[in-house]
Image (cartoon, rainbow, N blue to C red; front, side, top):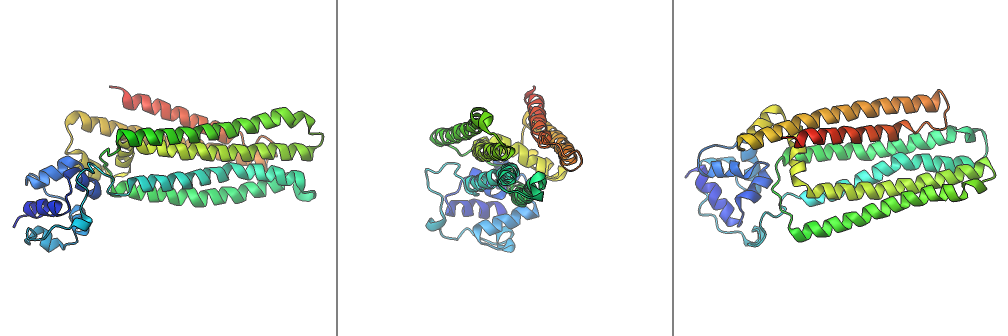
Length: 333
């Protein structure tokens, strides 16, 4: 019995389409079509993944006869499922949204809590050292959340480098509305923080009161940014094509070539151009934020400047500009 017959029958036992199998294996639908037409053969890692999906051995899949295996209703995909999420794509993004929101909030909230503490606590540390301690602790906490999450997401993209768009119009509308509410709440909190300082800043008669007021503003901004990041990640979740571009950037050259080999020439070139642009934008943003961090630390510990935090927002704006420029080159015909 051939591999093609085994694969077709195993799909039938799970009521699984080629699109759904392609998502689970991490290839395009065209690849599965070629396998079942015996015009191509999967690589070893893809064969092992197919074995895991259908609970069979490699020998059974390649050389055995699995066409007598009975249907498995408890593992079947519903008939009306279409290209349903069979790889945990939505759960991965929801987890990513929560962790990134908390991690980014830690980067900002340390400044706010440090300012509040310096205003409330008297002593030798109230001259700025207390703020530095809070910033350091919360930056470490933020990095402890963001870096592992980034690694988890990269591993997920490498395992599932090509996802079929399975969102229905209703799901898109519901998620877009939910994310829009999150964006509004986040922007509202940031505006409230700024208004708080503008309205009550003049009535702060002591440095301590001013520090507490500025610290409260930074805390509100931190929470607002967390809402914005959470909403933004869930909006990115809906852009499956962008995910595919980003995932291809994480593959090695040989893996990317193998995946894109099933696409037509125009689409292949489009993906390759996005791969190159994403790589350059990522490198540029890394350099920008590294420079911003160095400048910010020098302002904090050497110059003792109160506005030491300014380089990071400027770096973020520069990264946004780099992303916009990269988007122009990606969309250019």
